[in-house]
Length: 308
Image (cartoon, rainbow, N blue to C red):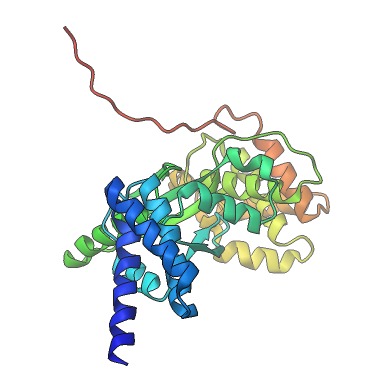
């Protein structure tokens, strides 16, 4: 029993090391040879399973070095040989869980979530994972480098959250699936239309597009139609309770609350009986004239310039 316990602890330690530190070339091949011997010759299937687990991690850590120290959560998952179930959010405020290992890159996680959503593989390059950090008085957003390991991103979060907790301040991190570059689509591509709609709606509510009040009325009416196509009484009550979910945050104070509700609801009542998909498509179409709509985003790195 003691031997078995010590053996398990040793394999756990080896798994943690293989997930975190890149060995020298000589040690790397020595470890691979040892693991292959255990996999082929050990009669204990539990040891064989652990050897395969370490082998896979050793291959990946040698290909790409870690940038951050692992979190306690990651170490616990490694010891139990279980993936981390990582939440990926959508701008509709929903989310889904995707399995992530110590070696999973941001690009691989993105592909996994798109596969889960049954989005076409050919569309993968058009999407990216997008980090939103909400602090006390500010929100910071960025596209995440696809070559980073997702666990390294989590490690940075953990350190920052600890710092903020010590200051009794709040901070929250989330990762969203976001279009990096917009692409043409057909009306039968329901998932694409929905992704474009919810992302565009998020950008509008965050005040990222320059809009006139009439634009906000029209867009708000279509947004309400997406939520409530048939029952205008329920739609009005919902709009009354959640009016600021329909107005760009930089335009809150440009109109009285009662006028926002009145104007958006009047536009809503005048709309034809669109389906949800049709209302989303009309919402996108209405924004097509905006110069910032479907703007391309690019990651930019600051470099030092030297003059002679």
